[in-house]
Image 1 (cartoon, protein in one colour):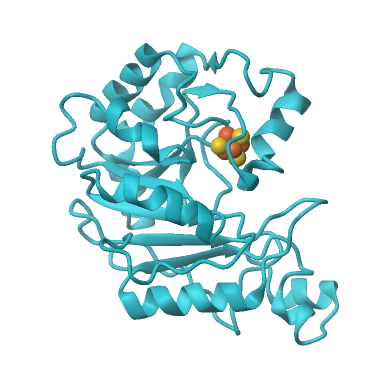
Image 2 (cartoon, rainbow, N blue to C red; image 1 turned 120 degrees about the vertical axis):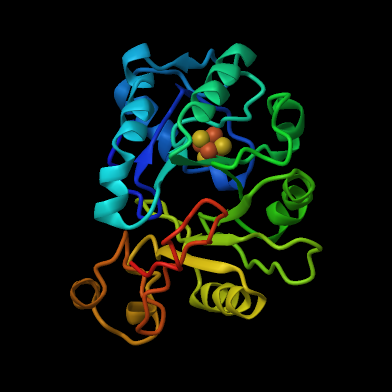
Length: 279
Ligand code: SF4
């Protein structure tokens, strides 16, 4: 639930509260629910959300204070993924908690906050009154696990002012195209599902969305295949999973696409020396 995230596209995770309700097929194997069952800290579904502790809420202010050092070492602003064990725009959350979160976001301007939701239709009414053209340190994103989810969700986000908009195509459980939308996202994360019951991401879906992003000027970030059985080194080229792991050890199930690591980030207005990074 804490800092120093292992998620490849962020530097920290922050969960202002925990608990959520499943809203779409992408939630079927929700890792946060699995965490909740293991930890026993929160009941999933239509149960009260649990706010995290006031000590934990101090962490972003500490990261913000350390930003000069972080940026000197890493060459980019700190990214904070919010939330990995909840949804910021969940309508079962006390609105005062969300107000507190936006106050925290405003008071930590050296952090880039990546708010990722599966409920973009709630964003507009849940933003703070001073949102204006979007807080300069907030990236708004939605999860779209397939075309149906993207088509239902994207317009809600596209119509909201934001300095950066992104799509997390994870878990990729069906084909996705973003061609033809009026406003494109700035960034698109691709990830196959992991875990024992993972639904396989197909290499042609991944190749297709990455080449579409490159053609349309959207920065792609291939996070993982999810399992080595989905990795084309195994599924197409016939390597064993151990051989594939030795060649491609990036992320769960590897992440190379035809021999390349594709991990770019969008530029934002606040990023100075942050040209597209390749991990
Ligand atoms: S929206 Fe996210 S956290 Fe909530 S149930 Fe679905 S996958 Fe889990």
